[in-house]
Image (cartoon, rainbow, N blue to C red; front, side, top):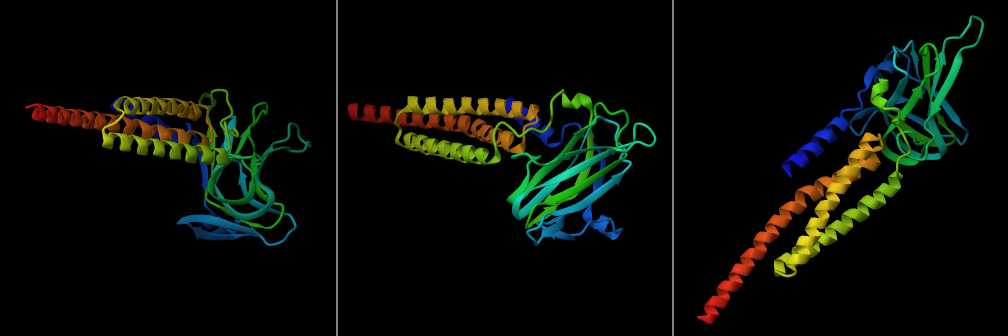
Length: 299
């Protein structure tokens, strides 16, 4: 049991430490503002963190050039701009956009221009719509097929209508090909964040109810076989959730996919075996008392 929990904890900590990313630059809005490089907006402190506030008070679309990175030191084929975003009452579907500019193939030809956008339904590449607490965003790009790395990156925010957006510090990173294992590290996920909330909440409620039933049966000294079966089944469920959670981590699924599974697995694998041990002792103690009472009455 201890070995299982240590393995889960180790793998989880490795996941949280990143996917073998190499940082190429950190960009903080107060520093950019000091040098006159920040766009139209306002550096603020929000929830104890640095943020850059952009507000569209009109119904007309707004496009803001957030950041230009000249001559990024990109050597790997896959790179991404990542950070955290929070937004309030955004009308329509807004998004972040990163343009990658490449030197002309021949003199006199225009630059190569390619973009990536956060227009997915959910996950780190999800669109900006409505209201959201802080969440991760990612603007990934793969320049496989292009001879030379980009010479410039331009990051924009597009809001179709009214709304307020807060951006935390952003980071440019690159990921070695060996770390990607041939798969795209950002997908919409096996299920949406809203579905994860329903499943996580429902699963937690069901497990809580079963725990209450188990506690009542143990207190009454009834249905020892059923209690043992239920606790064993919940322990097996914890193992399965842990396995699927680790698979989700390995496939670079979004946070809302793997975290609930690993969290529930952790709880089940810690609590159920402990309750099973306690209940076994409680049943044995009750049985010994019953036998002692029979001996006394028989005497």
